[in-house]
Amino acid sequence: MDSVSGLYHTAQARHVALGCVALMGVHMRIMLVTDAWDPQVNGVVRTMKRVIAESEALGHEWEIVHPGQGFMTMPLPTYPEIKLALFARGEIEERFNEFEPDAIHIATEGTLGMAGRAMCLKIKHPFSTAYHTRFPEYVSARLPIPISWGYNFVRWFHKYSGKVMVPTPSMVEELRVKNFINLVAWGRGVDTDLFNPSRRIEEGQPGDPFEGLKRPIFLNVGRVAVEKNIEAFAELDLPGTKVIVGDGPQREELKKRYPDVKFLGARFNEDLATVYASADVFVFPSLTDTFGLVVLEAMSSGTPVAAYDATGPRDVIPGSNAGTITPVDGDLAAGAIACLDLNRETCRKYAEGYSWRACAEAFIENLQPLPAPARKRFWQKIRLRRRKKPLELVIPPLLDLSPKPKEAPETSEEPDDKP
Image (cartoon, rainbow, N blue to C red; front, side, top):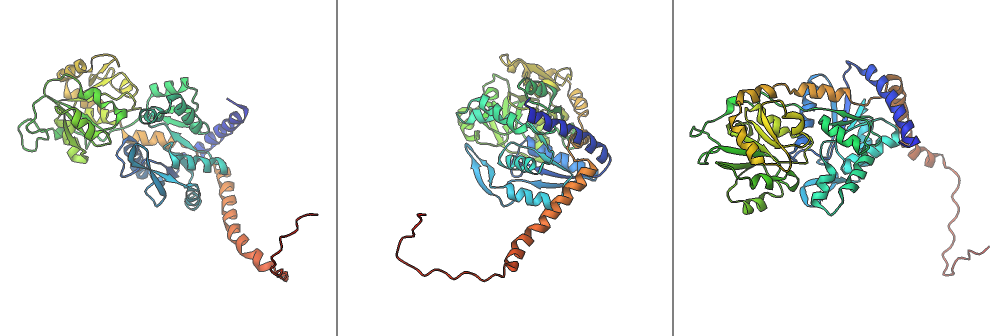
């Protein structure tokens, strides 16, 4: 660690300790800056929405900055459904000044995230970040950019974050080896009311989401995109029917390549919960997810999970008796078939241990508020600066009462700039 960043983090650690003590049990005003929000459907959006809902129930207030709020945007190359906000720093700073948050959290490493980070460094306000996705792997899968370049970028992005919230302990260790700092494990939860075994509809019953399909049903749910390794699932030699629920840029291509796989498109809320509960096995082939919320949603629905030994499943499945873990070069089909013999009630009971309330409380604890005395001084300076700014635009012209010099007559001669 260089001396500048060392001093920065020493000061931040002191501020965090004082700030957390000062705000313990106090309702906080939190500003979230995120490149991922509606209408995107992904784990970042779902996680933050649940955290916001749970923390609002505890009395905390939020200001959410996202691309769909009138920013100039451009589509993300190779993934046009995702919009990148441009020239956003001024607007973020204005909303920051108006909301006067106690803490700032930057959820993503996109253009809004970078603008929020730049603002925090400029005004010297501590902030927290999150490592939701394997950004370097995602970019490398879509563009000819080396993974090492991606890690150089995200390491730089999170360098001055007081706390980098990471979904699992294994992901924390992986990033620590890559010289990331200020890492903390921040788990996830599941809505056990929505994702419930009681929603299961057996074969042949009215409302069966897999009507006409041969059993057993091997299910995958998620964004249909290259980084999800869906081809590995589609190519498995399994009995019954392989079903994919979700949408994304690879959907049409995969439908043509794998005619034996049933694509149901996107499903939401109760419809999605019924699909989970009515399947026989959930197969999760991703090697790039940092957690995989869908794993918990399937278990909560009573459906066992077969997955590769990767971050996310590695932290959830072993010892649960709710699924199987297969080495990355192993036979995932064998793991999926073995899941047919697992007890569905055990899957449900295990998932009940994951709470969104606990996830939200951990999030609040990892925020980076200024301590009370410093916070008061900080906002006094901001308010004073904002009051002076319009006066600076109006008063100088009013005070400038000196006569204006007469304009020089126009001439066709070139000005003589020689001494």
